Image (cartoon, rainbow, N blue to C red; front, side):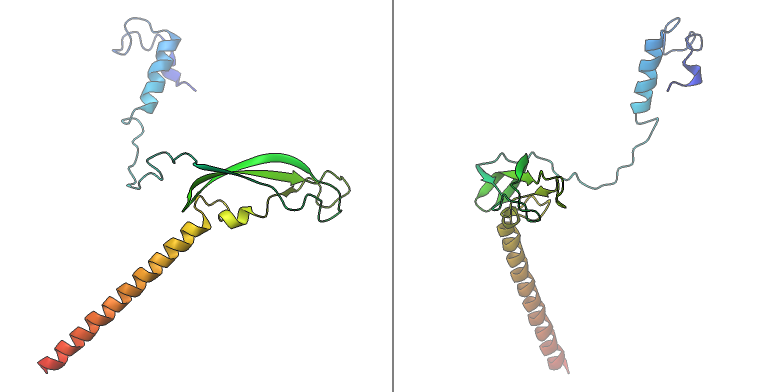
Length: 169
């Protein structure tokens, strides 16, 4: 939406336009003034971007399919509805998963058109996660050992302080 002063006559004596401005020149100036920082100051929140580099390309590929292609509710054969893709980073590398999602086509079934995803998908990563379960387990183990070493270090420091305090008395 252009402001009321977008009339070319308004700009005839202004330094933004030489002579009478066309509608395009006014629109171009208006859009450029909206995007400039002096018009709408942008606050710097100080939070870094989530990812500064692109994700590495997949080194492996796997196709996952449900173990059971018959509907759990009605027993009729399900058809493949679509393919879903996700990329998971594991200790073995970056893997591109192709998931075959099946749907029941029986209109009388209570699970009609409900997606059935491969069961094996849960063994690769958490829902909406980009790292595999093996990476999460390794990070957890490393953090636990780090916490244990930190706590033992604190115990040693507190014991040495207690020994120093006793020698002073």
